[in-house]
Image 1 (cartoon, one colour):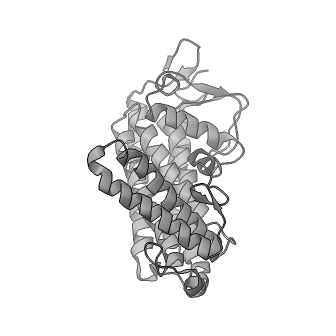
Image 2 (spheres, rainbow, N blue to C red):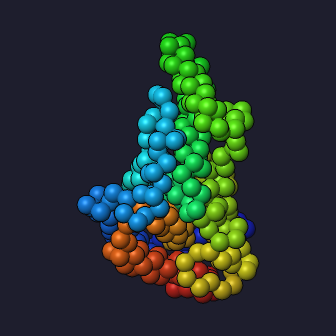
Image 3 (cartoon, rainbow, N blue to C red):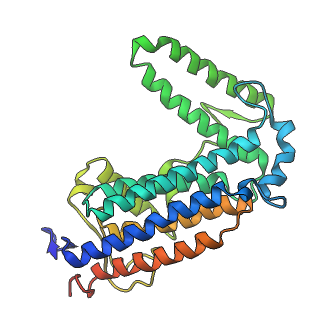
Length: 310
């Protein structure tokens, strides 16, 4: 084991941790496969009694001319399904990085998976209704086009694309106004939450914001993510398994990140499955198996654990 200059424990690997990393990787690889089966099965279309199917009856009153579309309610759900593909992909990349005991790559994949899950949970939030779901999906479209507009404006050769994006934004906002949505700057009011807020909502108390900050710092090459650790005393709630005393939440600690990814997947995929009326039996079993392994890995590096500080 090792310590940085502030005396905070930082695991430095070893055969035991490598073996456990391989076990974490194996169980994580099973999750994307289970999600793919659930998403692509004959029953993947919204169930007859599911909230998603019920909301399709509002399709006619919420449709609009291109680029708005004739099926915005289904489009909102389809965006959530696409985000589930992204979450599964990033979880698989996380497994690959953990298996080769990469010090920083797991944080980037964990962050991306959590972001996809945060958006998924927000889009599939129960009880908000079709109209609100379409508003949220449209704001995501507007946010994406606004980001693209900033990028293409820097390249004179893309002037034609700049005009196209500008027109698309104007058309979407125009249709939204016609349908009775209130406009506020680029977005349909109220403004959409930021990514950090969406991720933080996946976790109990404030641990989500802390985890997102640490993983983002690593992904962006910040000193806080590359060299420092954050110690919580007492340990925050929200990560898998009981925790007592002092625990190091390290941005490059794959064991802790594994717990964070699992919670994000549980909330995000759970929201989509509930909205769609999916059978989650196989997914629940594989998720529980992965949680047991992730908890064992995290305990290995806790104070008093086999490779943790005394």
